[in-house]
Amino acid sequence: MPAYLSSPPDPFQTHNTTTLADFCGLSPAQLHQLLFHPLEPSCVVQLRTEASNEVFDQIPFLRLIEAFLRLLHREGGIRLTPLGALPLKYLRELYALGFILEPGVETGVHKLHREIDSLALTTLHHTTRLAGLARLARGQLLLTKKGSQLLVASQRPALWQLVLHTFTARFLWASHDGHASPTAGQLGWAYSVYLLARFGAEVRPVSFYAGHYQRAFPSALVDFAGTTYASPAEQLASCYGVRTFERGLNWFGLVSVSPAAPGLARPEGLISVSPLLMQVFEVLLETS
Image (cartoon, rainbow, N blue to C red):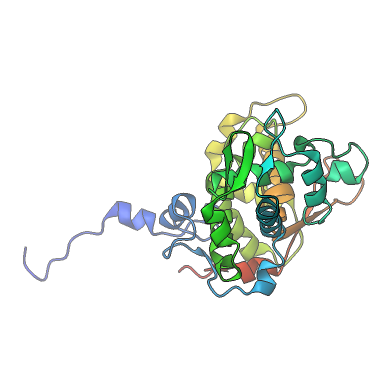
């Protein structure tokens, strides 16, 4: 081919690198990265590497993990109940730290009698085992060598990265609710972080973020069938709000959810973004 002739542009490459309104200014390639390779160097959402202990101290679920590992170290392991749950004595000790409170317990709807009475403590148990921080041996939950090593103060950043990866990539968020979708909210969690960084300067309702999530991932509606009380879009918004905001990112101290104003036909929470979000994540908002 003569030097003065150039190859025609690749239409697929052009499409993949073109920013789209449905993706809030991201390209398909960037959204793919958020979905399948979140936090990697080429991703628009990355973990900050220079986070201080003051920042880590503001992450409730990390603090809970650290407290649990210290408890296992102190006790030399704990014997689980016949059903494989944490004993009440230790549940009460961990809950009393106040890192993550259970609404039902706090309002008196139920008491903390079993591990399943606190979703955060159930998640704590499973996450530590999935992360290899604790292991089960003959009915006893033991601190692993990895868990012991990551309790060292200098290893706090590594522990945080492991906990975040395990919670977002290995622990199944859907195990805590009866919503129809096994993946809504957890799929594309890093995109939710991007949305919060982009729009979080103002307090916004759950439906605002759920709408953007639905436009980016329309296939998420497939899991929800229409009912007399809620459309598929409304069910997705409810599922997304609970998994992403009331639990996931809230447990990491990145957002808070406050009740909506009274009198609405369909009340929904209002999302406030914590300054911690941008202390933990580095988000590239100017992508063009």
